[in-house]
Image (cartoon, rainbow, N blue to C red; front, side, top):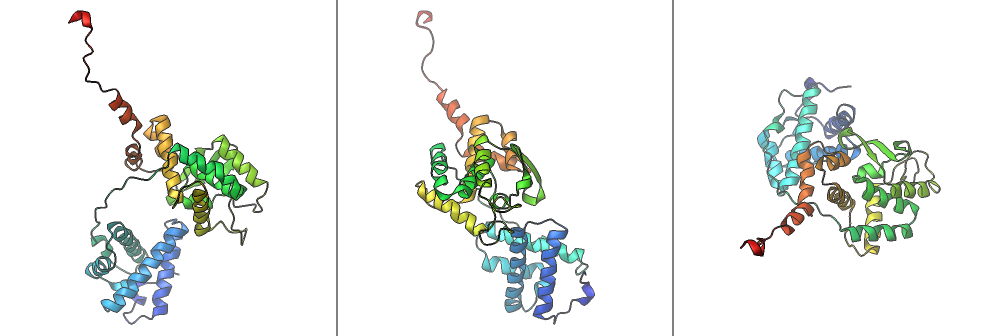
Length: 304
């Protein structure tokens, strides 16, 4: 049941405020379709902001001004990207407050968005990627299937660990990715073969990569990251994490096709500008163009 503005009091108890924050998390799922990671991140952000504001500004986030929220952002978050992420959570909370008729203005919209330095994504070489697939079977059929899906399907961590068997149709993968956006991508024959080998051993009828403690739930984020780290270490790659595999998949596909639109569709990016950064990782076409440069005198001798 929505909480109306008239119910908000400045002497509201911690439990009452907690109820509103939990309503915000549910609203994110019901109205915005946020994935669990997003809901959890936004919920934790508003709770932390509320606690800081109570301690340092004498007011709750529920009636904080733009200046109050700016004081929290700039006193606790020096990194521009982290600050922008927290700003985004506050803007979402302001939208929730308006939707629930608990406020008249979304004060978070007045918070400045900082310019973030654009770092190039990291990508493995073809030799390093091949080494991962060589050692992956030693960690079992599930780890092998997971590494194939990361490298051949370019999946994000959450997309991979929450895959369901119903998403696999012959050699195609149909699922909802980030922001519940529909994705449909072809599966490489090697990835299909790895999935089928795992399917023989797998006990869950729903999840491709179920939790080892409860097959009715997907593999946890921490466990999936640890699998990738262990396989990477065995292949001589320290500090490997899942998103590097996504970058590797995108980079190698772009090198193979030189088609930015294809890579954008493959990754599920909304904007080609996001995908374009992969042209700067290992710019093969630029290397080929530079190699064609010549400053030699190519005029035939007899015409001189």
